[in-house]
Length: 376
Image (tube, rainbow, N blue to C red):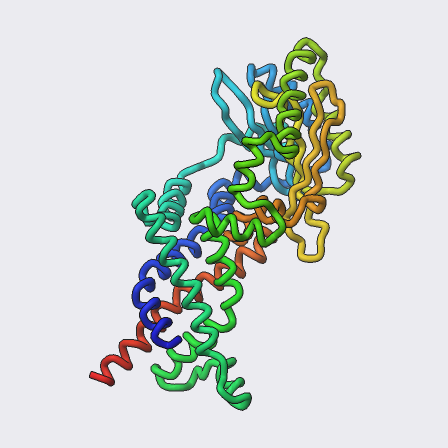
């Protein structure tokens, strides 16, 4: 185990350090973007009534702007985010729902920086070749975590306290060893989970193994079912045909107002939450309303969805809690990997864990270098 831990560590240390560092940097992307747009995102609630979505839609139509989507925050101190089409171009803007002021489009100056960080995190900016290098390094990291846990296990119960504490007043070599050994133990589960969810994106066989282990069908079986016209795909085809039928039959029908749709959606999903509504378009003839449900023990952000046709007739309701476990995991793979699943508290936790992950290759290398020099 010691030899496996040593050599895999030396082989993957630089890549693992880079993955954890870029993960730390990317963790607060949304918060930094909001900070850059703070004069547009954060507004002062006033006593006047909030403008209804229907009124906002009418205002935009007067300016030859077609409303395409609307994001309604739960926090009254945040502005609406409105998507619209103007001159055949899709745009978005922040909107003060109290004053009716269009606050302007998002400042995306930080986006380029985060694009570079994300590209480094995914593939070291080397395309598919870099993706495979990162994947191999993360696989090694998983083995490092397992072998590290085995090496951490105390030989006798009386040594347990030693493995759980860091001697801050000790000499540098002992302090460095404790930081590697103890912090590695405390972050083992989180780092392993982050690594596996990262591999889920990189390797189809990891994705397949996770889906099957959570009760889903393997990717190869899904392909066969698709070829054989299985019931699941028959249902998908039926849904597509229904939407096509709606496009033709309701082409000239009067469209339900956005206010009516939100009222109906709140009846189907009777709780307060961040709400997004997508209006019918050429690809999808239905209103799609998604509410982020946080009414659970851990406060996780779980999406519930309802759809209505153009005239406001209810079509589908998809609760996250009703989905099978494999589909729940598929839907949440990204926020589970990035730490966005519970908002700022989980992002801060992931940041700290990633920062410790950055330190492990450094402290591990220093332990090896000290022993190497001593042996020499």
